[in-house]
Length: 526
Ligand SMILES: Cc1cc2nc3c(=O)[nH]c(=O)nc-3n(C[C@H](O)[C@H](O)[C@H](O)COP(=O)(O)OP(=O)(O)OC[C@H]3O[C@@H](n4cnc5c(N)ncnc54)[C@H](O)[C@@H]3O)c2cc1C
Ligand SMILES: NC(=O)c1ccc[n+]([C@@H]2O[C@H](COP(=O)([O-])OP(=O)(O)OC[C@H]3O[C@@H](n4cnc5c(N)ncnc54)[C@H](OP(=O)(O)O)[C@@H]3O)[C@@H](O)[C@H]2O)c1
Image 1 (cartoon, helix red, strand yellow):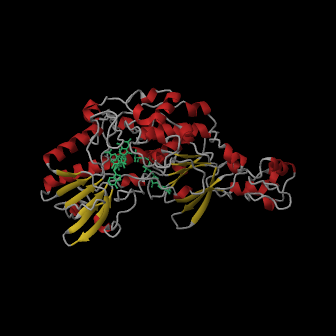
Image 2 (spheres, rainbow, N blue to C red):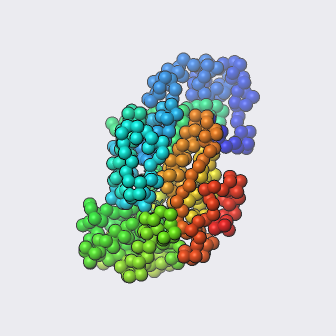
Image 3 (tube, helix red, strand yellow):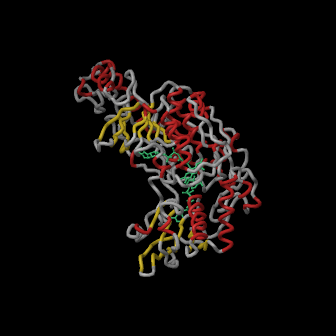
């Protein structure tokens, strides 16, 4: 088992299962005072919250476990939240280690979030989107690897990887579709209770396809639920702009399918795109393609930053050619006037007028009226599920505290991060891990390769293979530009001058990595 980060201050606060825990062991409390009830027994003061023989309730506890969905041979499963590529890779790792996963997927098909961007082409070629262990398992079943250099669309990723993986005989019995996890807690423990907490199973409150609420016990939880369902709003301050909800019929979050189902909505229209990441790049490039077919289409792009800086990325220096090309193509569209770029627009309110929707900056400046707005301002993790768990999250990125400095775009964002695993992903809540897209919280640049190495390490930690958990190895393709932006300045100078690499990130020893994380911007282009 992985050790959860120790917090001496918290340990001292354990009111019961320090000295009095031994009382509980020596003098079993009546069953009513234990078996999942963390309250100290009124007569003996014993605190025996984890069901065990010493509670005098072993039989009941075992019956309960046996009745738990997914339990095999009395051992609880490891719950995996989400059947996206990373959740399924976690299931593969668990099965490979002889563990029983229970994958709970909210959608009525695996990869439900990717289905919503199935029309988008990835910038990572196949060689970078297939987990090596999953590949072995798939190939043993007769699957063949697609052309390693080809770039799949989201739809192809589903068809060629996610669906075949979920259909493997070793994985399929462990996947439950239409099961949305509403909350995760420790059985009978709210966030405050300490004594016996680490030995108490997790309880997941799940809405089933029949609309009922089911409670599922698990010995550990791997949260791979992504961030797709929680897009950032248009309001520059991180809360919805005034009038954003009222304008909902004309506002779309993400990347519209302008050559497919959304064509009529955008062809020949005045469209405003808000945001400055790859989603905005894709939306703008697609709209420019649509404009060639429907010349009346007008495209305005509003970004918060006052200067373009390194926004367009590393171009030909990007180790992912297609990622570098996105920025280059968009730069040319801006230079040619196909896309009208508005800098320093921090949207505070939107108003529907007879002329169209008008977005207004916090300075009071107004953009010209448009017919549609595409909001591509990134995503944030949904933290409501885990309100009752003890999480150590970075205050602004909402990523695990140890991981955050390695991915913080304020400090260091070279499109790569130091290899990391269970140690960086751990929380005070033992055996609970967030992996995949959600692990980065609000930080950009997550890559599938990162997620696959995360789950390999986490599963090692869960099965007690400490060496395997620590031995994290990963070399990520860098963007070719050190995209640090402190107050509008870059630590690397202009994109063209930036080194192709931000240091030997992937091979930097752990001690040095910490140092880099602390010094932040100065170290970014060392
Ligand atoms: C448009 C786009 C393009 C991308 N391109 C690339 C690329 O080229 N290369 C790359 O490496 N990465 C890329 N990424 C980033 C990232 O790799 C993907 O977002 C990837 O899908 C993340 O996988 P995941 O398994 O972590 O999350 P997801 O794929 O988002 O899967 C999460 C799953 O959890 C389910 N879920 C959510 N909430 C619950 C709940 N409460 N209960 C149960 N189930 C739940 C969802 O339905 C979903 O199926 C891209 C991302 C986007 C948005
Ligand atoms: N393969 C592909 O082609 C592809 C396509 C889409 C996405 N992706 C991946 O998916 C992930 C998410 O990408 P994303 O582009 O959706 O999100 P993102 O990378 O987080 O970028 C969104 C950007 O929008 C800006 N922003 C945030 N709030 C804003 C607001 N209210 N108003 C104006 N601007 C705002 C921020 O930049 P500032 O702070 O500078 O304003 C932020 O970096 C990334 O990992 C990305 O690589 C890949």
